[in-house]
Length: 437
Image (cartoon, rainbow, N blue to C red; front, top):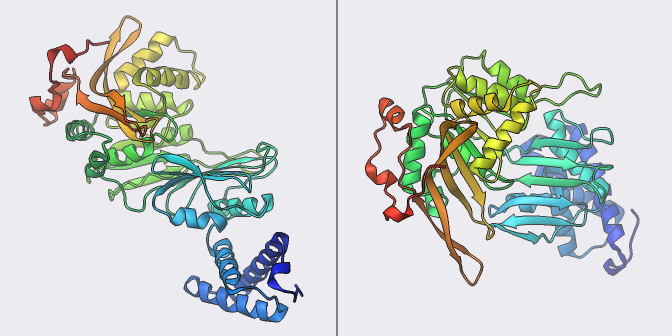
């Protein structure tokens, strides 16, 4: 770097090369001198100043400050993503190649005013995320799931699978863990629904949270897990650990990708099977998406009550169909009726979480799995969201209310010591009451 011209003669490519030059030199210096974490910001600032003096690069002060901030983020943070990660209102970050970055903020998608220098810059940030976790992404293994230190979930895809350049998707998690009152204030559920769900969790009912991508399933799973008593041993199983259970007696496990030889992978199914040998009071699976659904159902049916999990589905009925498909993926040649019997006897409750068109996230149904009638699993809505209209600015209006039907498992709740008052299930007009379906 020997540029001595006026600042306006520096092109965008010059600045990119300058930033890379600074990052490479400072990274080597940090590694060689083993600078403690608390002193790294000061070290970087001092050394950037020295490099500017040595190279005699002339830049306006505001450009120097911006280069310092970007270099600091590249070395100690997650590059251009760091300001987005620091913004508490942003819930999702989507990188579609180096020049297209989108965010979800307060339920709405928009384009972010940041970009990466090039494909290599995106890949460097992906490596920064995954290398501490012992994971890899390259031409032969072009997709990876990971997590940030704060628990936020990360998915990355590189070429040749990502045609338009490396992609990063980050599902952020709030630093302050949401509680039931927060969900009530947001309108995600009502106090009646919360009281009912609390009783069901404490009474060791098996609960499946169903919902689409980005609907808030994991957030709700975190909230419901908060009802589990402190004196119970909880085993959590996830692809990438993101659950934030607050209890003291929690054993967290996550999957392991195969090594470079394609060997020694540890799957969700492996972990579910292993958890049964660990004396669990509760098994919490972040998401069932394969043959582990069969192992989960068998665990629920053989004394491991109180299990919680999530599944991708758009309605309680779809959740049953999805579970059927996942069980069949286990490779067991089971008749469909037997699979449905397993599901109906294992699962007590399906909680449907939805992301509405205006970005609101709500529990749109709480549905009892009420057994079998012939070859059909019987579902009964206990609570349901009824949409009543849409405002001029596109906000969906509606009401969360009980259907008026008491669940068939009410005696089990009472036997466990949870006698819910009639007001929990009061629906209003008799004409509003649906029939069991």
